[in-house]
Image (cartoon, rainbow, N blue to C red; front, side, top):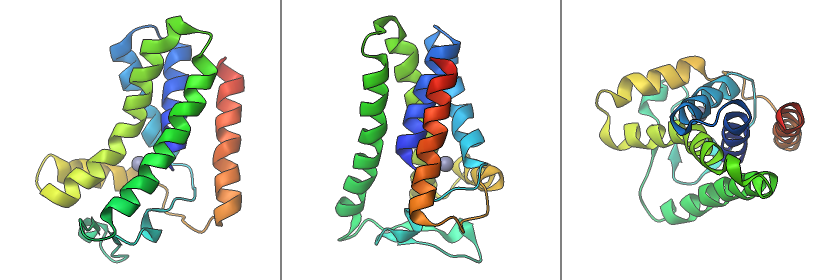
Length: 163
Ligand SMILES: [Zn+2]
């Protein structure tokens, strides 16, 4: 899913479940993989620096070239949307700050490992990439707008359920 979804869901779930920052981090990581297992839209294959091999995902890459900073800013903006949404929710619940922050980092971190695999292509990153691919929904046929609306709906449901 997009990073806004992962950041927000990881933070909000962790803050709702635990006050322990380490446990919160773990909940964030687990939430990432559970959300990825749901068929969803994402934009990685639409980035100009993305190299996607549909026959072998282990060949995928993100090229550090002339489009890299442009694409990185899209990813950063995506991330920022989740961070701001999470901050708004926990603004008046300051005791939730650390679990929300660690849960959010745990929610985002697994996608950083795609990039680490692309650039290093060695263990343990290869195994992590294989696990990520294994758990990730293979159905990418969800159209863009319903896809984003669907992820937004998931966030609203999570927020209402845990707050
Ligand atoms: Zn992921």
